[in-house]
Length: 168
Ligand SMILES: [Zn+2]
Image (cartoon, rainbow, N blue to C red; front, side):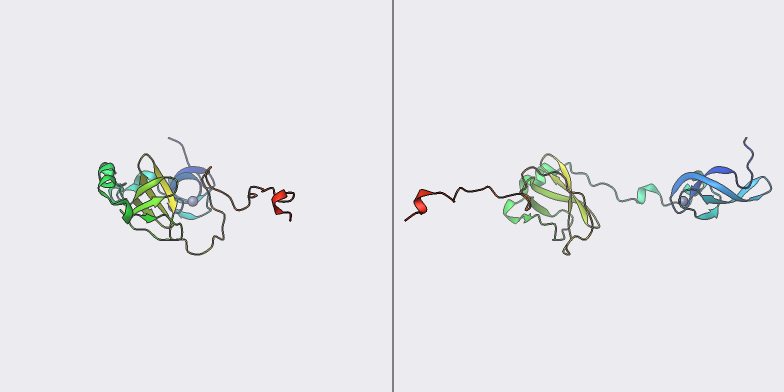
């Protein structure tokens, strides 16, 4: 069994990082560690191992369960494509909403989290942006979309300078 001392290092559960991380011992009571400082966030808190913190932690069963999309093909087949809402990153969508995407086709919203949503399309599941009415003021990740025409791209040039038909 290792012996600990103040200013020594110990692996402890950080209450702020929610992770088991290297901590520096700041106080000890007899041979037991009392307080530690997280080497990652600098937060000081009572010493606890990950095991002892799990007793008070929220049970994992309370985490939002991923929705199963077993009947997805059936639901998609039963749905009316005319009722699908065209996908627009500025709109806000609801769970189970039928949407149509220019690239991926018909899909059903399977999960929502802040400004993202998971959408199950026929063959793939994608994460799309939703509820972003305001212009983007921070960099965001755009998946490559080969079919998309970027505004910065030069339009195809038309030969118009020396066309005989334009002359009188
Ligand atoms: Zn920490």
